[in-house]
Image (cartoon, rainbow, N blue to C red):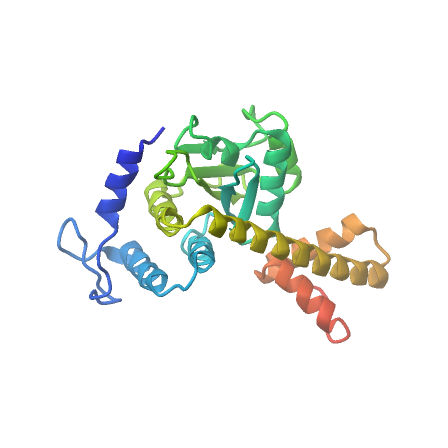
Length: 273
């Protein structure tokens, strides 16, 4: 497991003053030269994070930036562990990430569960969840949700307790879909999220969990409305209606909940492909 001192070292190596750097040619703090395309993306992200107003803003930006810069990744989720040990998901690119965390809490197993455990590894990964996975109950459930491979990176340990705050997770719908994902980049992105969480107290974390729960309820409501519309229009079951939504979300590259909200509010004008 990565120690707090190792996390601090990685943080010190990465966190530099990028406000003065050009967006097109940020300075590499180690070599004094151009940081390259990935470095420019991180510098742009860092500048936006410096202007973020809330921890929730930071987590959302890190999550969605990951999806933008890593084409291998289909779903990104930020997992935080509450005082009661339950996992919640304050930021994600797809509601599947919330379901995956809920399953891990219910089953007390899974990659995010392991990475968020202070006794667990700093990173957990599995190339094909259909082949001999260590999570005997969670893996088949994840496969049923369309997930085939996963990488979970532990967030920086809490300064007071030394416990991991949670995990930063990427999922692919393809077996071996994350074999080429940049683990160093994931570490840097997880560090961004960890820094945002480092100075927040238990009240703030509780507020994050409340926001996530409210968002989850809203998402389920609007997805339920969209499913009802599809069931009525096409004469299909609830499961078939959800499959229509998921396929359309993937084909159109639009978040499922946003597609559902658009269909629920503009269903007289629109139809799904």
